[in-house]
Length: 169
Image (tube, rainbow, N blue to C red; front, side, top):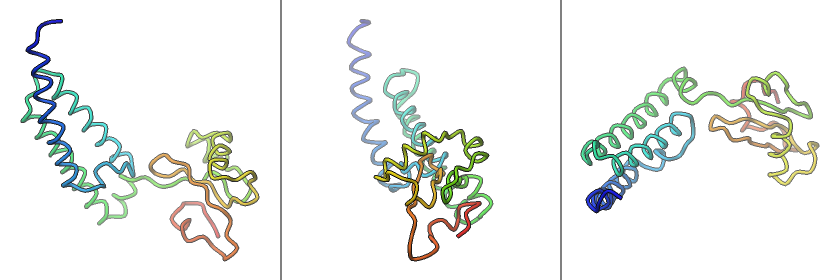
């Protein structure tokens, strides 16, 4: 215990920094914390790290923290806008989904490259309430790291899979 002054500083800074970050995030929109891709995840982690630094580090002023919040959010916003305008940049920033299982077949090279095991795919299929792969059209590693399970459709091709490299209807 080094005295009350550091504790009071932490409390006062917290009372301003947290609402300030929350306000900036709300103004910037839900995309800021959506974690749709690696860059979104990095921004989310960086915002949390910045908030922690502002609150706990005497060397980081509240104004510096607020500027860092604003810059991180602005960079995320600008990169999302630029990526939307360029398909190359969008693929670079967002990555591409990876087809791991397709019509009864585990795609071993893709699984190896993505570092995903059969057990992880089976777990994702179970999470979707499926007890068999008979009803599964595909399992995809999404750009946000989640595994998506797409059920077989009797109506024909699955439009949601059109942008997945390697998928054929």
